[in-house]
Length: 470
Image 1 (cartoon, rainbow, N blue to C red):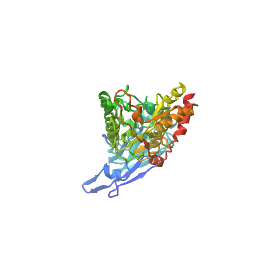
Image 2: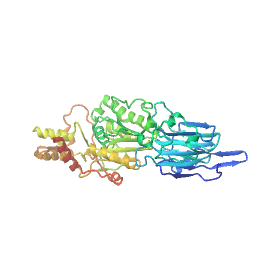
Image 3: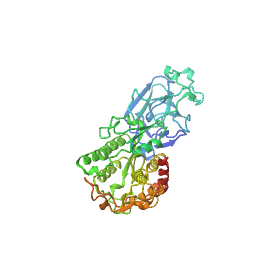
Image 4: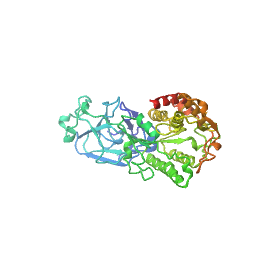
């Protein structure tokens, strides 16, 4: 019988994310009323915002009607409008809780939030039972389900009415036992810009994980409408490693347009999708959002970009920060696979060329393996959302200092590197030259407090050169 007058409360269960919600029901001789789903009150009690897109009702004539066990690729809020059920849930997600069982009776005054991948089933205890559920994705014939047999001996659900005495569909009768169930996988992660320097490092970090997808500009146009580009409710995170990084070319008429499209329009599209579908957006930013007037930049410093590239990155940061679940990861002086400053200096040293290198720009290198690892750490630990500086640690150096160190580590005389000012270096350059920040070093206090300790830049440089020499 429905219990009237109790408080709205939420109770955790042995299945992670499966919550029991006690609902206040108000009634008199005429009937009763309840708020079945009240977003703000439930959020205040720790229930995640479901983002409901569909409401389904299953009417059951007879006592003992039994349905399940079905794990679906969406979250659902299960309640009863009329009657009473015995509900049984089995965690079919990959992980330590796989196979965990929870049961409880539901009437109009009790509901259950069922996470994606948890097997859902019920048995009616009264005639004319109306079983309702809110879901946060539209039903699709292409949706992937995971099933468990109602009679599974491992789950050993203690059904109030023997399964021998109830009506069960042929499909439900044919579902596998727990030992034969392939665990339900996690929501997907999409990495954009997957062929760039950071993208390649992310490929290495996530190697072997089937739920991580990689895409590049040839496969997914981020400047187009992305609303139907993917079944977004099946995703948890987008890592945006795509960027227009030709800082000098961005000062040209064509480059200015391209830079704004990739660094701003594309980010706006990703932010729109992430917000609409409650995804986490990881967006990679740059020291170029600052003018370099401060020797070390903190996360809360106001934007002060000098050139077009920096302006577009600042605009992209502002857009990404509108997403409720976001990490803006600000970095500098990136070194990874392919052409980069360290490889160029090592090649010049080997070929007997004595370069002139600027000595009035100061910062720290960021190796993409460390940048990728830092991003992975923020996601894995569920660090508070927001902006994080992320580079390698250690002594702040000029480009000339780093060039000398590359020459030294590769067995060449560092005196072959001639320090010059930025103005002198570009004095004879043809075409537009973007202004560079004088100081690019990033304060790493916040990311360190989040539990990620960046490697020393010189140690990372030594290892990088050793690896590339093999």
